[in-house]
Length: 249
Image (cartoon, rainbow, N blue to C red; front, side):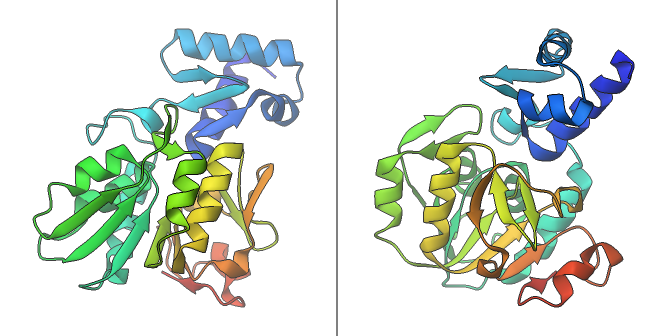
């Protein structure tokens, strides 16, 4: 496989999943670890990705707050965000993580909505603070800089003390068989705590991440109440989810 082809595949994997491990790229590309390291260095030098321990992440995933010029599949994420607004009801208490899709959602919330938000994301907290009728409560802890999320024992302990109506999560990978999965151990532990704190859980996820699996399990698919993608609920790509208890939007 030519270098240019490998670079395209690497960029696609990173853009879809936000973070990709070098060992997984080696298997996907069927090349040596050294080849992956050189390819990642080339893409870092070209300003297209950011290198992190064990792999690489998308630059748009860690861009500051709401000024993004290069969000992958931004139009699809905006459609998902628009559809997710139907879940909001005045008086609700909502819990969110971070990520580009959740950020698009935060920017679209109507000014008339009266909701309390808990969030582990500084980005989301700042974005929500522009809304006059939204109370924002941040849950603080160790900041994972390459994900802009608070993690750690203090976050998990705080989450154990609250019960919210709805939890909004992005997804690294999601499937009926393997549920919600990710690659970062600390993030996985916090997402488990987020789910435990919520009466209902919604996944906001572009369709490219469906029917994929990462290394670490967050929860089974039957723990998810809503799946919101850019597709019609009747799209053939969602057939695997039709016979589950998940509500499709």
